[in-house]
Image (tube, rainbow, N blue to C red; front, side, top):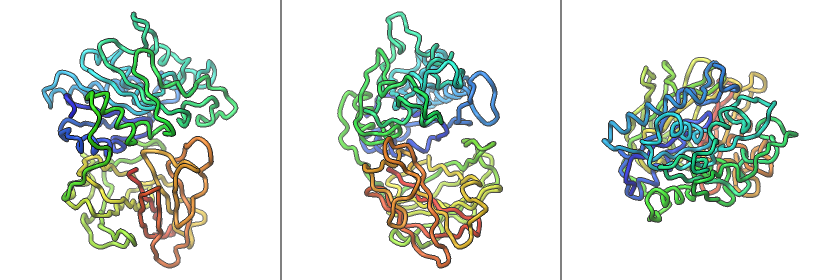
Length: 426
């Protein structure tokens, strides 16, 4: 069991929702739910130039202030004097900045950085020179300035980094995943490692799996407790309570702010067919706190969430059963471009989504209607959302799969301004 509160910090463009399976694993190993916290940054997408304001984007200074305030609330609520921080990707920048420049050195006992872009995604004097992801930029150079002991991490805090052995899309020799396929990045697979930290490699894991996968949990649990977890699977609860926030987009960038006026309905569906069995929440209108629940149901239930919001297609999100309760079941409607105006007639637009990892060709089985979707290339796993059009002239079940997880969806027609998403826990 963890001795102190743990605060989980998400990455670029993400939300706290990505951590819910990790929280389940901690709970299944005896950590009380009220010792586990996850921050939602208001504007999770980074600015192109960290020094210049950018509509609906955040800079490192914004994330520093929000993390400071969140940790202060956790300490006040729990009565603890220090926290442990666990971060994914860009979240590592926020954690390191907080410890070095925001007073966190005296309030943080342990820090776990998972797939952290700790030396940048690239090192360039000319390409986005003041991006926080540029290892040659002012933010990253200041963050990596050696401490008096010569290390890159603050003394007095225990540090762990988790990284891939080559499948991290943001630790690659070429800049393919920043839109610069001919650029030599100056970053290797060892880029997330830090001098002075314990640095662990998780083989065959992608950029997100080094944060959200079971092997990542095993490593962070051992580091935080000094003992192996009793189990890596999740212990189901019979009756569960689900809740979360509905958020949207601002100028094309995701936000974690309440999408006031959106309407949510939730339906229990048949596991094999995706056909609705009963309505659990009927037209909940989102107000200023952004919450759509709470909803009491069962861990055996398959659910369909429907989000209606001005300017977005009606979004049907099908989920396999939730093993345990969670207040991090965050919802966001699809962007308008998810449903192109041309070619809607007679088709259903169906996507598979894997927020906690990417689809790996030859490594994973992922299918829509019995076939792999297009747009997922071999090599480094880098795509977490894949979409196809299927016929929608007759209402039918469309099976989707990611490895051992199967979700049945219904082919709601695109002509009715609807998109369908099967979202996997794994």
